[in-house]
Picture (cartoon, rainbow, N blue to C red):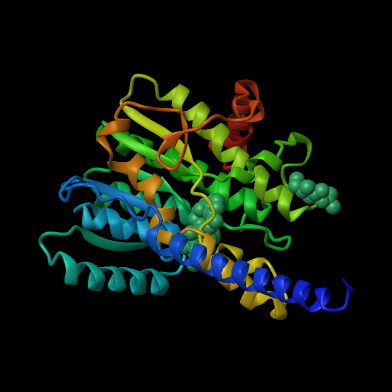
Length: 336
Ligand SMILES: NC(=O)c1ccc[n+]([C@@H]2O[C@H](COP(=O)([O-])OP(=O)(O)OC[C@H]3O[C@@H](n4cnc5c(N)ncnc54)[C@H](OP(=O)(O)O)[C@@H]3O)[C@@H](O)[C@H]2O)c1
Ligand SMILES: *[C@@H]1O[C@H](CO)[C@@H](O)[C@H](O)[C@H]1NC(C)=O
């Protein structure tokens, strides 16, 4: 037999295999998108009479969590750095809910200004909340910034450490009285699996010696977990719980500082559409921790997909957690 005729056959087979792979892949993508776990529904009315604060609630995971908690009839305060963007999100959520569950069968949404990159803004926000709100049942520390170029907060802290950790540290501290007087109450902290690549390098928490944007993000997310541990320890016996979670990979605006070459954008969009979670899916674990009776009394734990997960030893180091707490108190001016 000559080799000649075999070659086209081989080529045909390869083309066939490629086409089959592409089709199979396409079908898989569609299945992933449309048959995926989807969104778990809690009983309506579960959060009636409860007040929830969500930071960074004008888009992404925070916005989706706000919508779901309002659907469960909570009074939801969207804490946003830009009032306009916050009001637009609140109006859009009201429209969405109004079609599904017209008032009074859904909760209330209100917007308050909070810039976590400014400690004076954090203080103003908390003063207003404490004056105006008789109770606070849930605080969700969700706002975050990812891998931005080197920037400083108003007080001169490195932006990712400043917003993701320090701003929320002061915020939580100043709202703790109200949370305690409303107990049983809950604090929910959004971290990320990327904490694994971080380190609490006490000698350069402000990245003055060197700035690595990936490291700084991971460090801030490790700080979120250590903060949760230390706070849970301090809150023992108060009926205020605090838990931390990673949401998975979610299609949001978080990547705004990452430059994807124009030519790779369509591929990225396809992959993210197919494989990333929707914001509503990403909001599942925060909503679960904020509202489910299953986690009543549970504190100081780390969750993913509504289940408890293990942490690396660096995220369970109580000495580092305590030292980070003490230094954070000084950095935000709670202790001199
Ligand atoms: N998306 C993911 O795959 C993923 C994975 C792991 C962890 N997370 C975490 O999930 C959380 C939510 O992120 P997302 O994915 O929903 O991203 P997003 O769509 O970018 O939302 C982030 C929110 O934080 C707000 N924010 C940023 N800086 C702020 C500041 N200085 N003061 C007040 N608010 C500020 C943003 O407000 P503006 O719109 O005004 O900028 C926005 O509302 C973050 O903590 C993030 O680290 C996300
Ligand atoms: C920046 O930090 C990341 C995560 O910690 C690390 O993997 C990477 O090697 C660092 N890059 C440089 C240039 O040091």
